[in-house]
Length: 232
Image 1: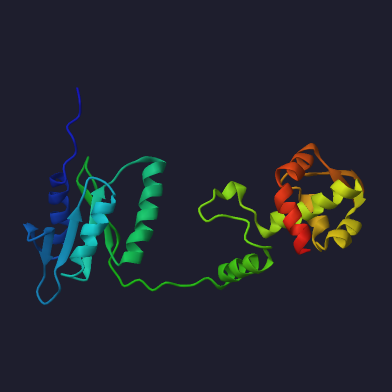
Image 2: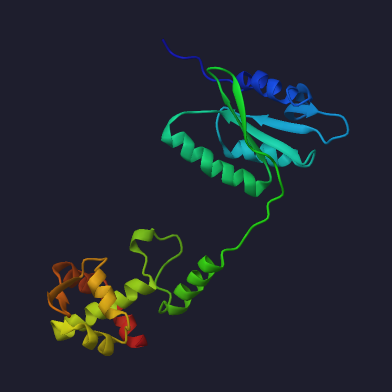
């Protein structure tokens, strides 16, 4: 037996009961709004109902902000990790848009307010901003095309690791201090010891050589390595 498709109307009674419990008079389908609730002397509360999070839901809710500052989106409450992740990300989106968020648990009609509407006041992270500007300043050239998958990004750290690999390619097994002096990467020892890309083998205390992966990297990143050498 195929389950009947979920309908937005199934959300209405639980939302109405929730708002009436707070002293509002509630009516459905007033003008363009799915739900309108009024309480003496206050702006109306507007709720947009949808069977799931969607761009259309947020477009409609944003339009309703021209009618009231108190606008909620409402969706059925799901279960499992996937829904909780979606709830968290959409709650963040609602906060940025100045919207509230309600879910309805259909099995028992419980409506829950997860977020009330409020003006969004963005807070900048000085630490993240400093890290962004440091990466911008230390990266050589512009080796990435916007939209590139993050796994293949040429970061400043990868550029420094590539410099170290290039030095080992030319000199063979070398002391870390000599690698740092030769390629101008002060953190050469830390990079080779951490070996995030699997490019380096420690052949003796403080001495490193290229691993098989490192030799492949020299071939794969030949153009970038030449550009780094030219800029060095």
